[in-house]
Image (tube, one colour):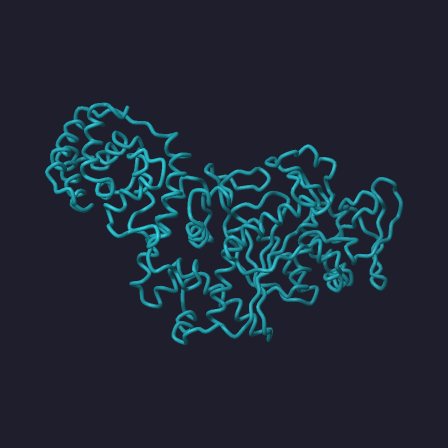
Length: 528
């Protein structure tokens, strides 16, 4: 990777959080004398991939890219690890044919049939869903399956380290457990040779030299001895996390705030195994519209597919970049704002100096090469244009855009062309069902009649600022004490919604003649 020296120097002091994190990882690499940096993200495929999973990969990728700018001569890898050997603890609420999975509880996810009927197992189905999305985003990653690693023997050497340090692991974990759980806890979970279930049973004795453990079968009472290697056992997840960090030499992995205590315990286990826990940070969780944590099994909050139905992927990346240490609500109404914030960052980027560019979200979203232009029309404006024009196809929208910004075409502005499709879909699904026009009050009628006269007197090619000035002047005349109420009245009476973009910009895009016709229709009650 060729990096300008000046840019590299600026990256060493940049306050953008990906650079702050990358500097931590680089200090670790240099301290350990390594020639390669391993970044990792984890995925639990017990439910369908959700937007939080994507967020972790996107953010880790941003840190990795920042690292590459800081240390272009050090090779990096990003491992996306799936804990698909975990036992199925409960049947998710949001899958088809869920009742068929009840018989497979406690079996590894890669042994549970796929309720969708498309893959060899439920784990494989969810893994494929995750990879398909990551691939569509162009992420550079290596997918690693826990099942493959355990069964192939890739983890064997580290599993034997866990066995050799069995008591040390117990000493770390047992104080964190209740009295009853302490009596049965073991870091090793043997797979039942009969049912294939992942068993949570007391282990005794441990034979380090032979590499085996023994346990009493919970149903037959038979004493069974089994190897800890070759996929005959898996680890409880805090020990599993530490084992994975050690086996894969992971240098950086972030985690949600709900796992902060687990990170501490897994770090101590890693140290007991002779390793060094990776760098990382604790990010806040995503919440749904009601302020509740989003859940894969419950299916609340937005999914990856839902966001991308209504907005471009760059807007989702922006949402992941901003304030990762703050809890954020994740629901449909935030999508238009995220799209327009992205467009604003792209528009401002070219005028920034190099130091400012390193702090811009679009630098990290596009790995230092954001698009040279955004769009002359905001997403909010497009939504209101669809509403006012009752457009059902993008050709109608492009007719307005061509008049508003001559020379702007789908070929010259491909993102804007995509936004017209997104606007039509978002309007159809979320705006149209909520539209509710109201009649104007007497005071509002007087103001609208005055505004109509003012707009009819303007040249047809008046720009948004000129129109906005007239709208503002009428508002000052009739609603000096409640200008906000005046603009809200415009949206409610003319567009059937309580808020929107600058009305002057909308009128310039929609066209003065059509805007005047819209006001007339509102005054005559034709929109009710």
